Image (tube, rainbow, N blue to C red; front, side):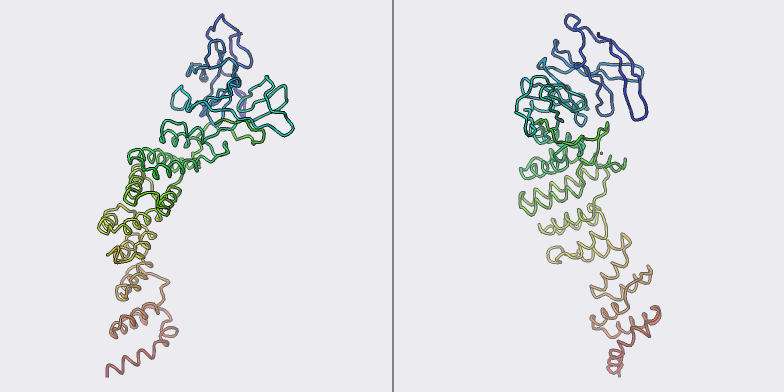
Length: 437
């Protein structure tokens, strides 16, 4: 009664795994059916065995041609059961009313949180109270055989995270969770944790460690193209089983930007400290070679302008601290020149840098520089800018010579100009000619 024959059923076939002998327990006690479960954790297959008399649980990893004991966990009560939820091993202790959760990915054989109280969701018409004959079925079903009630195990992620040793541990744990397997959204919990850390002014080193973990998952998601308290519930739908990390649990950079924007709107952190936090995230993103959205860089630029740091803003723009884009150029061009001097010119240079010559042309016209705008238009063959925009800019400049030069250029190079646009400026031409006499 101590020899194990294991079979794994996949969608395509049945796989016979190596048989193996169990080590001797106290008195060589036989292994019962309820003591053995074949479980999958992060894509690895384990034979999980409860040694009730020894007070231990062993996990034997099954390979194609061998078996090896990988983990040995403490069992706190002989009356225990096993569940697996989202690659987490759960040891239930019904007599004590608690469950222990283990995340074996990192190799630790300690529970990831304090014992979690078991809350039982009783269906209507059933008198609360366990019947004393609970059966645990892999992966996450519990049945009261006497009362004929079936539950599905659901994890309370918030309770687990609140008892983690550190914010870093909690957020790293959440990145490995599949959203479809939980009632609570791992991404939302991650963002709330980061919001709390900033609001409570945690150290920049602690925040940097958290940002590195999140940015690493973002990078893995980009490279792979993948989206990467305990309770019994009688109403939850069965989660889809998977052996891999679903990285959709990870926040995006735009999610984190929304956290920073909310912190600024709420004035939940001093501007100087919040700017340091944002720069810490930029450093983590650059380390993982992540490209952030123009909105993110525009947010940093607006913070520097609001704080009266025009020199630092210029340094960021000139030396690549902010990634050039048309979106950032728009934000720079819209800044108050008194708060951020020189950003108008920087905006025009950035349009040229990213190849948005139409926007550069329109920006030059807005600054009353039609001659420079014509040079850009002709050099880069810019289209879809009306000749009248150049003529109006020349008129606003108040220089008859400039207007005549622009008019002449348009008559030479703008198809249909003389028949469509030129007649509207006949009176202007007459006035210029009269003044010339």
